[in-house]
Amino acid sequence: MSKFDPQRGLTLVELMIAMTLGLVLTGGVIGVFLANQQTYRVNQAISEVQESARAAFQLMARDIRNAGFNGCTNSMTVANTLKNNVATDWWSTWSNGIRGFDSSAPAAFTPAQLANTDAVQLMFGGGRSLNVETHNANAAQFKINKTNHGINDGDILIACDPGHAAIFQVTNSSQSNATIVHNTGTGTPGNCTKLLGYPVLCEESGLGGTPYQFTANSMLFQFQSIAWYVGVNPRGTNSLYRVSISGSAPVTEEIIEGVADLQFRFLRNGGTNYQTATAINAVSADEWARVVSVEIDLLLTAATTNTNLPEDLRRIRQVVTLRNRVE
Image 1 (cartoon, rainbow, N blue to C red):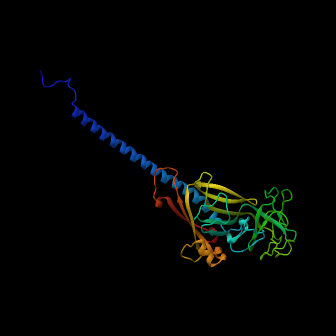
Image 2 (image 1 turned 90 degrees about the horizontal axis):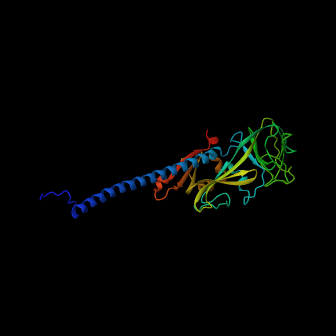
């Protein structure tokens, strides 16, 4: 009988060796698959962070660039005739167009602000613009250049010419007669005087203030007052929020989810270092008029789980210049 028997098959040792080699090969394939899967998740998480940061910075930068713009120029007096109740009408205080808040916000927003995060308030003239034909200061009435102008009772406007600007609430608007009235006695928060001069001297009759009559070709703009902050959303995570004014009522919008921290620092004209809001306020409330640039520091989290991105990949900074204060 021949020593070679084709029907003999494999011995137990040979079978165990084959199985071991197969397991090693399979383990290698699985290891490569898991590594590639983790690499994909990390790249996906980085992409999500970058996409969220890009959207956040684009929208915040648009508002920050406009801060302090009153519709005509930036270097002029601004008379704010709105009644000021800081507890409820945080948005009605001019504050030189920009104001920062360290670990706080302009008001108790809903949803609530995330602890130890900053906020910023930005004010400027924007949106629809109208050309003034005549202004009767004592009658508190503007005649503008077109009918059906879209301005409604209760809207907040900024009037401006090359030397002066004034913030007021519309008390009566006529689409057919192309008139806009800024009287006292109605509206929320309402006007404390009908006279639009500076300094503002509030007196309910409306004629105890400082007179100012805007000339032909002055401009009317909608008053924009906006706050940015991080709050706890209804899902229990953190989101970036934008609060804006519609008419005279605050409207809160959720912008992006997954914001772990938000910090602001500010550069004053002639300065070399960015400072916190506390440091600016320690000099003077009027120092906000000298702020020319804002540094935004965002710490984001990705929606993709099991990635454990280090903080340096999730923290992104951007500097935005107030375009109306750059000489």
